[in-house]
Image (tube, rainbow, N blue to C red):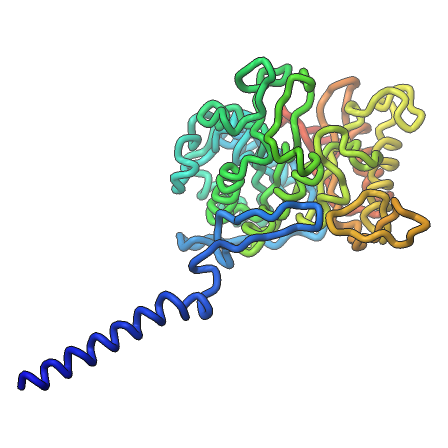
Length: 417
């Protein structure tokens, strides 16, 4: 019996050694990514970096919600966090959609304050959840909109975030004189290269989709402006990447970790990106954003174009022309197969044209402009708002969104149903 016990023990030890060998040496071959994070390189000019998240193929398990398919022609209005938390006010906007050609509402998820407008679950988001305006019944409200057939877009203000920078000042754009840099309004920005913050945006995106938002719209995806820019200090990464490249790296990271869950995405960019070839110092270039989002929304408010734009002494008095020209140029650039804007890893078409690069052609329907429905620089009534909509149609686009910070919209500019 003693000999049998020793034999049994020997066999058991041999089996244990084999099991440990399989676990430590063979398992990684069958379960790639389990023991190390995947590194992603965007192009020859972009540094390789270690990913901090595993790519998701489905949302985190949670209560079942419904989602509405994106309308062929999105016709949307914008609703602030404070309005969505005010039932009487938000009902007026829902009634406006019910009685006009509108079919979509964009609601703030995270606004300029950096606070989140609904109760969150992720520890990454808890500190900013419901610290300002918002709706405790956000999920139920979205469900109500879906019952009416209304498409719901959630807006996330990204790099402008004074709440996060107060908690994590080391991740903010810094001031040469010390401390966190602020723009003329006293608002601070997160440095585009802050990788920990990227994961906060991803977590918020996933949770928002689970709540019922059909589309996620990313605003302030740019470097700061409107302040003492000479005083702004960015992360050392910019010694390797310029602003446009660094921002594109973020776009790719967002796409990798958010798109697989099935949500539709859109990005807001400055109106001038439709007609200029540089990044205007904020990192935004139309061609660099097109590959990473389902829709691109240039903010082509006539009041935001300088006097003399396209020969107009006052763009506010030529709203049709401003929209027709700016979005017409955007259409050309989206559909073109060449560009003079270099992509990461792009190759010149010919040595005789060293600045001419090939690019994918994108359908014009990826473009969905923000139109002006607020008085600034001029009066915007039914004629001015409708002229912008007509210009959008005349360049072959089908979708548009109206921006009014007051959330009071010009019903006379809209077609009834």
